Each structure stands twice: as C-alpha cells, then as structure tokens.
Image (cartoon, rainbow, N blue to C red):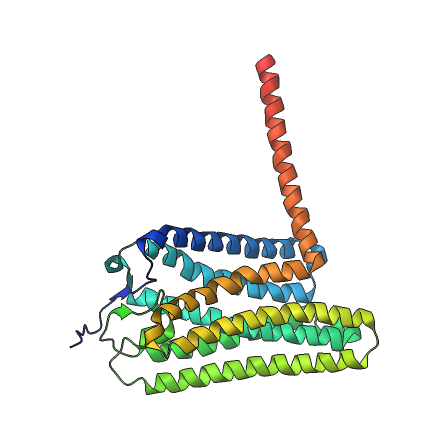
Length: 329
C-alpha cells in the first residue's frame, strides 16, 4: 500500500540514476556542457550588444533565444549536477522552490517555440519582402515581437502552473531529475482532469501554432525562391533558413521525446535522460549552429577572442618588463 504525506513542504527529487563508476564522468560531462553553453550564449549576447554591425533585427531576435537558453540551463543544470554527488535521500527541495523551477522550466520550453516563430517571421520578411525589410522590421517592431513572444509564453505558463499549485499534495517524491509541471501535479491525489485538459490544449495549441507557422513561412519562402532566378537570393534563403530549421527541429524532437516518454512509466530512465538533453542540447548547439552559419557573427566572435587574448599577452609582457626593470634598479 502506498504511503501518503499530505501537503508536505519538503519534496524529494528522484534524480538521475547513475552507477558509482559513471557518477564522476557524467558529472564532468554535464558540468562541461553547462560551462560551454553559458560561455557561448553569454559571449554571443555581449558581442551582439556592443558591436554596431550586429544591430540587425535578426541578431536582436536571436538574443531572445540565447536569454531563454541561459535561463533554462541555469535553473536546471547546476542543481542537477550537484544532486549527482548526493545520495537519493538528500536530494530535497521545498515545494515553493519546486513550483518556481517548474514555472521556469515550462517558460523556457514555451519561449523556445514562440521566439523561433518570431524569428521565422523575420526570415520571411527578409527573403520575401527585401525592399521593405527595414521599414517592416523597425526597432519598434522588434520590441513588439519580443514582448509578444515572452508575454504570450508567460501568460500561458502562469495559468498552467496556477492550476497545478491549487492542488493539495499527498506524495513527496518527484519522479524526475528536476521539477516540471507534469511531475508536480502527479503529487496530488485529487482529480487532475482540468490540468490534463488545459495541458493537452496548451501543448497542442503551441505545437500547432509553432509547426504551422514554420511550415507556412517556409512554403512561401520556397515558392519565392523557385519563382526567382536570383542565385544570390536563393543562396541567402538556403543559408539562413537551414540554420533556423535545424535549430527548430532539434528543439522540437528533443521536447516531443521527453513529453511522449511521460506516458510510459517503464521507460523512466530514458525519460529522465531525454528531459536533461532537452535543456542541454539545444542550449549548447544553438550558438554553435548560428555562429557557424553566420559569417559576420562568427568573425566578430573570433575578433573579440583574439583581441582579448592579445590584451592579456600585452598585459603579461608589460608586467614582466616592469618587474625586470625594477629588479635591475
């Protein structure tokens, strides 16, 4: 018979099950992925913000994706890698912290879709309406699209989490490496019909809007390219759209796998791994994919890295010469 603990404010994370032999390799793998992802995303944000040549709408909108990745990774991965070194009985989290983590996790997942939808609109205007691109994608429009992407995601997620936290709890174990909405409302012994209906509507609506907008946008872009004999336009379309599409597909498939495996308790270990990869993989690959495809962005990144290294070398040489001068005198 299952033991129940009603409305406990202390929960236990089941965590990611790893054998003792693999514990430290997995720990350093996640830690390295986290450091690299943060370094690349923060680096891209800094370069875009301080470089006047990167003030284009495309790069400004891409900043939203980097911010979303930073928020999602920071909220989940540090706690996850710390729990790897703890015994299961010590992986404790308060209910309020768990609810906040579930909110941030869901916000990260939702903004990944809404931001990519906005970026698809930007690519559509750039390729299908190049002469009016500057007029349409003005600074005000970029701000409006940014607010829309985050605002819609915020409202939808607030409703989702509010429906969950209204429930009383009768269990204390989170069957996941971190808190998400599904794991949180599974703690309740009350009817979760409303949660399931809204959650299903939320997921279907978001995926339908996301996939529909991407398909519609790329269909129009394909038609324009097929009707045009402009090789430069076709090359630009292929380059920018392939980048956007690869990022979208990585995010879509990793998220759908994690959602689908929630329905199969017997594959809990695979579900946990897919949930972790949904956070780490897109956040690590997004800056790499955009950096490789965008020559301007990659060149600026290399230039700033070289400048930073040169300054450090000059500083060290200056210190060495100063010490040498002082020692001789």
